[in-house]
Image (cartoon, rainbow, N blue to C red):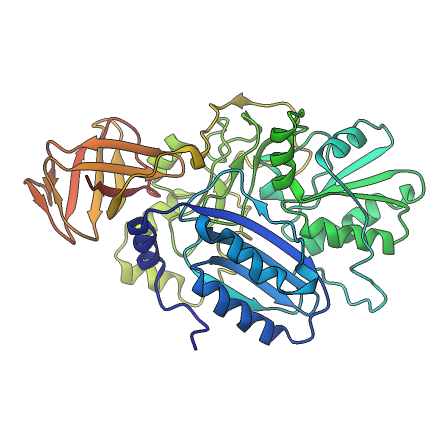
Length: 452
């Protein structure tokens, strides 16, 4: 009986591309008393694996928290696996604003002590005694009340690229840090203020609302379904968005746009920008905001020190990071002295710039394609992209697709290329290929051959 992944992320990505079927990115959570989390975990894994569902899920005695990628054709069957459990009947599935077939490439279901780490050891705290849920229209209305205090229960790197106007945005790296900070900051307003809270999908402020009721706050409210559900409702009901900017998400996209406002800056040059990246140096992986120009100049690195390290032989890089603690590499390290334009609190409600509206990925026409490899570098002045062929074969005359979160889907017909530095008509697995690309290429981009 399979209870673990048997494919690598790269192998899974290739299978997804070859299948050519639409996938939906979604999230959900439920607080409940689960007697046997291990059995619950195993049962879910078996059913989801059969449906080709991928993602990251935590289960605990207090409930379930999941971020998933599910084939659109299996969506209802996936829902049925949840509603087989009484506490998940009628559960809200937050479907992402933007979809990406590669949002998750593995199925991970882990048993944890808690689905949201809160640092609390209070046996009298009832996590199910929650605040009042507000839909988007009600949330907008209560924000207009001068008696309202709105709090963002996400981390500093999330709120920096997008937040509700007028919100308190704690300068924290974890949810557990925010609870005592906000409790102390608002201790004099327990009786007379509306304490309104929000987070990405609702799970953190659900627990926070119960915590603050436990602490004696009388009027506690939360945004139902978080920012993800809010974005969906304002679009369906044609409401004004009180949220500005991007919503940070915990998959490889690192964000989905809610409004065309850019409220943050590139941490390296200060240019208006809200695209997160992870430092390319495997000994760092600092999460930071980087514009396209700095991404090209710094080759996806956060500092010249990290840039120099990435140019060293792999053996030397491994030697340099041996014995060093990196911690939670992808999301926790959001601060560094190298980031000159980093802002963590007292965020502005005034946009720094506007961006063009992104197209809904669900409206894009599916192209039958096969993956060839990935981008390695882009030479700005020469407008030349460097790619490594990892699968199949590339030939002159092939119609190719370069695809990525920022680049989008760009098609070209290959009429000239250099293979390992020499002009050639065919490139095979392991070859380095360069050719002219009339648009900027990013390191996250993939190279595909379009099949006629």
